[in-house]
Amino acid sequence: MDIRRITEDVSVSPQILPEHLPDIATSGFKSVICNRPDEEDPGQPRFADVAEAAKAVGVEARLMPVVSRDDCAEGAAGFARLLDELPKPVLAYCRSGTRCAVLWALSQQGSKPVPEIVEAAGAAGYDLRGMFAAG
Image 1 (cartoon, rainbow, N blue to C red):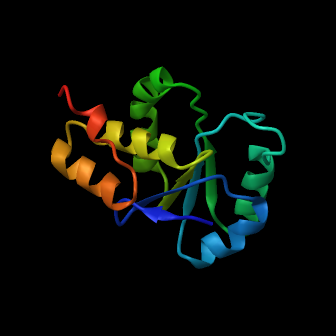
Image 2: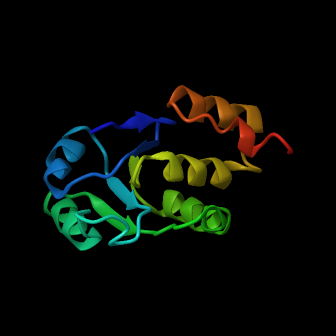
């Protein structure tokens, strides 16, 4: 697993597997958010299987599939709601982790200064400067 911490309460990761959930729980995560639709890629685990494994180790799991950049912009409010509702720390995952980092960044606009958002994402390995260049 390639888990990258963005804040104390939020980390992101590429696709996780059901068998990763015991280690995720042991690492202290209380929730996972899946930002991938089922069948995005052949062989990808179904969210239901990840959710079942999460439940077995006491981790909450939520599905919020995002497909395109437009979906990220529209999904930012939903992502922020999930971050408010779910026990922390939260691990969000998608194909590479980038989609989750973008969702987190967009969900923080208005509550954190843009340089702080960009710096936090950058420290986790996601260069989001271009997202905010015009703003």
